Image (cartoon, rainbow, N blue to C red):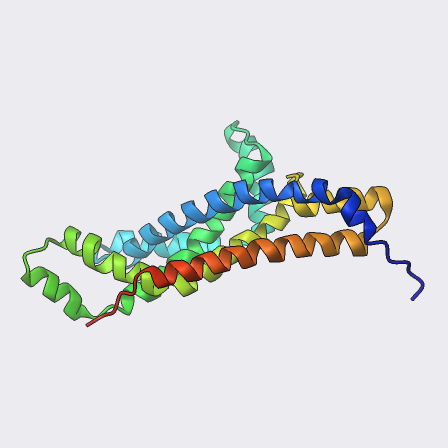
Length: 222
């Protein structure tokens, strides 16, 4: 292989490349928050005894879980404005696309956690005089949330990794900037390796934070 490595370019343009982390963060973390909240709502609807809520949740989850993120992103950014007349910035389109996909994945994680809670928990709460809503709020959801954290962390990591597809609609995150510099200097190995290291550092930092969150409080079913 006749290739001269020049990783010095990462020191020269490292600040510019790392500047894309800001866009990765402002897309990933709002998407994670929205996906977590919507996923919990979808999971509760799926387990609802009201059939229309359960069916609606199943349809939403099946659609956005199976639809490729790239297709969803392009459709939202380019097709949705044609149909509605409402245009969104690349950042807004990215957040919406990743939130919809992530909420479907989060729903499945929450559903597994909620179904794993023994029925005796509900019965004990009702015997203490708690209403169904209070039982859901103070007993079921806290246990379901903490028991679901490991699986939910995987969903969140998937959302962060999916930020890289926003390069298709010109969001200036890390991969976009690496591609931009590669076109100028023809150093794909060094620049894409640098982008990979940045994302690995971001995801590892997030993983450590989530593991600490898991240890804050342990909810054990009786």
